[in-house]
Amino acid sequence: MPDPPAVPLDPRDPSVVAGRWWHRLPDGRVQCDLCPRECKLRDGQRGFCFVRMNQGEQMALASYGRASGFCVDPIEKKPLNQFLPGSSVLSFGTAGCNLGCRFCQNWDISKARANDRLTDTATPERIADAALAAGSRSVAFTYNDPVIFAEYAIDTAAACHERGLKTVAVTAGYINPQARPAFFGCLDAANVDLKAFTERFYHKLCFAHLQPVLDTLRWVKRETEVWLEVTTLLIPGHNDDDDELDRLCEFMVSELGPEVPLHFSAFHPDFKMHDVPRTPAATLQRARDKALRHGLHYVYTGNVYDTEGQSTYCPGCGQRVIEREWYRLGEYRLDEHGRCLGCGHPLHGVYDGPPGDWGRQRLRVTIE
Image (cartoon, rainbow, N blue to C red; front, side):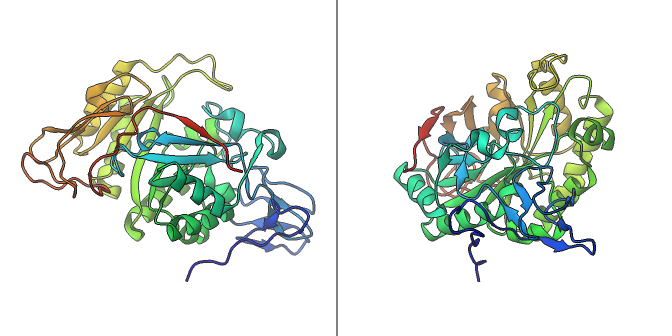
């Protein structure tokens, strides 16, 4: 049975709804149990993410139904390379984040206060209808981390599934065990940002911890049917040395399995890390080669021009089966069930009929 929709706390402001995953402390504060930060808030205080708050001695989400914008993107931009290839996805986010990454590439949204950027409003039903009207196969919760607006994402996912649409989350996976089933239970696919493979990196550059993310990745792979892909943004001098990459690849193979795609993407100076240079293409190629040697079947490069590194190859015969130039598909050698036309080997992923032809388009959508 689906979860009941979120309930507004004030009929005059439908964007403030009752939050889930919290409990009251003996001193009168409420503790948010959604993510490992477990913010402890007095009445009127907001959590680290800014959009969750103590209102009237209960947890509230203050950004329900409000978004920083809606766009139709290629699904490969999430990035999801083996989930309905070539199709379009209606993407949206809200504001705030439960991580504090100094290198954030979407800092204008994730570091915004709720009223700064939330210029668009839409109910879950209107979002799903807009996705259908745009010809999209799925809806993505992205731009900032959807964990912090879980109630809105869950309700939107329900509306999407009622209309035959699939749902996607792009997330850092920083979520507590008790909230995982409801959040990931509403998804068809997820790309989880594994920021690095050291606690020092997470503590110093994200103001967070590594272990909860690794626990989430294991749980999603072992306990759900969600199609999973993983992305690591390689930052020169911070998470790109050979030892760390070896340990990351070993974790991927042993804990998630060689069939989970891994994306290495290029950093560009942004937010509070303008003193670090762009990631050289050679670094991405080195990381990709290393991951393939470790036994991963699907390894990609991102944020650089690299047709070889962005294309998909059959694990059975080694032939290229999906050619990509940025987000545009070229040669496509899979049948409608995702089997290699050369050797018949089934590729892991979600394939449903012929590939889409959305290409590199990005279309801004206004939802009335």
